[in-house]
Structures are given as C-alpha cells and as structure tokens.
Length: 127
View 1: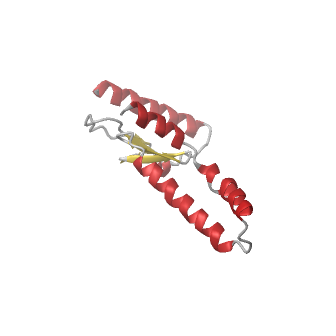
View 2: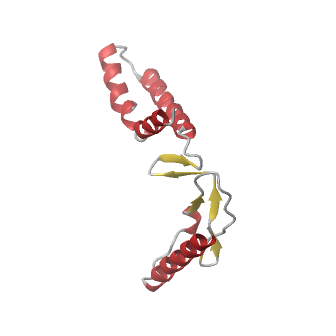
View 3: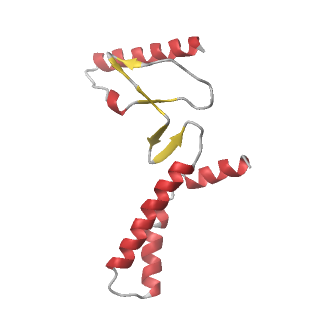
C-alpha cells in the first residue's frame, strides 16, 4: 500500500516537471484524490508545493463518482436538473399542444441522462 502511494507521488512529480519544462501550468485546485473502497489510506499527494484535496466524491465529464461507487448523488443531480428543465418548458410554453410539449421534453430533458445507464447496470449487478 505504501509502495503504491510512493509510486503515484513519483508519477505526479514527473507530470509536474514535464509541465514546467513545457511552460504549462497545472490547475492543482481542479485536481482531487478519490479513494475507492473501504480501505483507509492516509497518503497525501501534492503537485509542486500544493496539496491535492481528498474528496468523498468527484465530478468528471458530468458524472458524479462517489468513493463507494454509489450512483445516488449522480442520479439526484440529474433528476433535479431535469425537473427544473421540464418545469421551465411548461412555464414558457404558450401553446399547450401535447405533441409540441412531448417533442420539447424529449429534445431538452431526455438527452442529458448520460451516465445513468451505466449506473443502472452497476446497481443491477450488485442486487
């Protein structure tokens, strides 16, 4: 376990040196450490002189990943967002034609369920 921490820190040091050599700036404030599973890991990682935050969940490409791989937070965020969009469509529509409302719903609400299918598969396999 300690060897893994040391190897990861060395890899981060190599990335930091590479970025400095190429005059690139790393956004350490956008970096996070996510320990997946139940093992307690006391390793602290840093890039340059800045420590990387340890978080219980991270968002990457719009998908919330929790340290226990639970889909609950991701599904909650998507549901709230889609509920707001659906309400906005209803409030803003002048015409109450069902066909138009269904097309607007399918276009603007149903298209952003990216990642939920994967979580559904994971949840099914864990049942």
